[in-house]
Structures are given as C-alpha cells and as structure tokens.
Image (tube, rainbow, N blue to C red; front, top):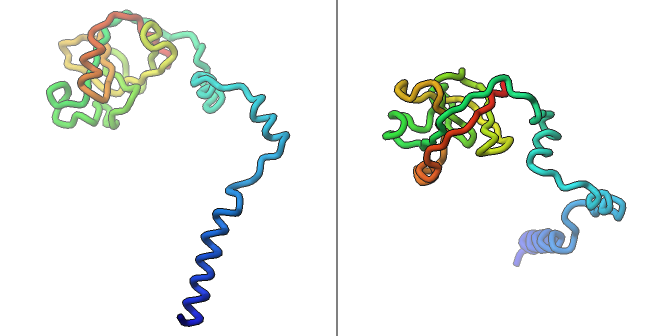
Length: 157
C-alpha cells in the first residue's frame, strides 16, 4: 500500500473514532440542568402566547350562530383546483369557508374547538347562504365523520 493511501486510511480512521469518543454538543453544567427542570411545561396555548404575543382572551368582535359542516380537497366537493382556496391560498389545517365574512377573518368555534383559531380563506356555493361555515379537513373520511353541527362562532379579527 502506498504512503498516500496509508495516510488517507489513518485520517478516516481517526475521523471515525473522534465521533465516537468525543461528546456531541456542549456539556450541560449542573446549574443549567436545575434551571431546565424548574421551567414550567408550557401548554400549546402558553406557547402561542409566549412565541407570538397573541392574546387568546380577547373579546370577540361579533358572534354568529351557524351551521357548521366539513369538506376536503376533492373535485366533487370543491372545483377543478381542490387544493387552492378561493383566496388563492393552499389548503391547510385551520382554513374555513364562509360567504359572509371577508378573506383573512379569524374566527373561533369555542363549543367545538376551544381556543383554536380558524381563518376564512375559502367560499361556498351561494345556496349555502351566509350563516354556514365549512371546515377543511385533509381527508374525506374526517370530513364525513365531522357531520353537521350548529354552534356559535366568534369573530376575533
């Protein structure tokens, strides 16, 4: 074996074992461990408030009693572009369709989802009227299982 190959083999041998014997990342000192344990476990709500400064206890601007149904991204429930909403956004969890409220309106459905915030980004067929809210689900099965409900929605923004 040539000297160059020996040097390369030794280099890779040392590199390989350096990953095994050297610690990954910095060592946590005892005080840091104590501080980590003493930190309270944040709920999803606390995380949102702490991360984004969102106040989830704001009073609703308006409240409506609506029929609430569900839909998924299939052409028979939407149109030829089932993954694009009427506001030209890609569908995602938290999107709802409604004909009364403008695009971007944030709403809550406390009776069904607590403090979860939904955003109006889609429209429904005009025959559904203004007091009907349609929640997007990723699968047809989830949408079917949701069924039809009646609940108050709170407009928060």
